[in-house]
Length: 245
Image 1 (cartoon, helix red, strand yellow):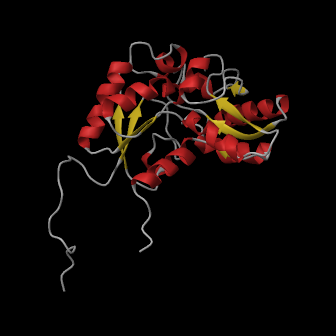
Image 2 (tube, helix red, strand yellow):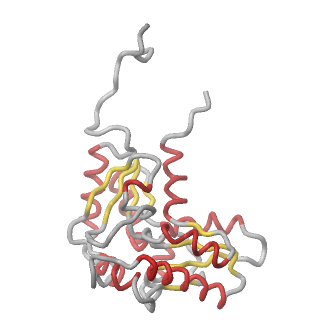
Image 3 (cartoon, helix red, strand yellow):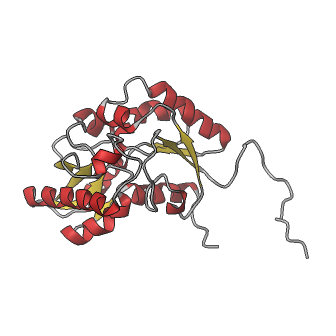
């Protein structure tokens, strides 16, 4: 009995196969634990990674990613050349590059978890709205929100005043991170946001390093929480739909 497919012609044209999602990574050295976009074990499917050298979290989050667009375009094109059929990034602040990246690579691009906000809003009952938890509320500008299709009056809270998350991820004051403190920073930001805006009916996490803490936040506030994991599992499902044959 032959175990070959019905056709024996295998289609080529790529360098790598079986990993249709390409991820543009910032140049950083903090730990990426399971649940983080940058940890390969997070995903139930293989992904392709490409680090954009010189694109530090500080440059992207605090300095508006100025001057980095050509580097991200080149890295995205490299991923597509390797075999990626769609592109994402590991920083929600890269929503600023959504249109330019999509135009440059010619495949679907989802730069930011923020792009989920209109979808989540559509699920909520009247009088409820989406709230955002971001790594840096002070530098998440109307330009970032508009690029992702987020209403400019969307309430948000950042982790700048926490003890660990912002300090390690953005200021790069350590390669190591106290995970318990990081979780407290994310959960605390979400609790403060809901306390200030009781009309919030769901939360979207901007930062791709926050999914490890999403369950704790959901338990603390009792509301649905969406993040880059929820978005990319949906995104990938379109690239490789499940066969029910």
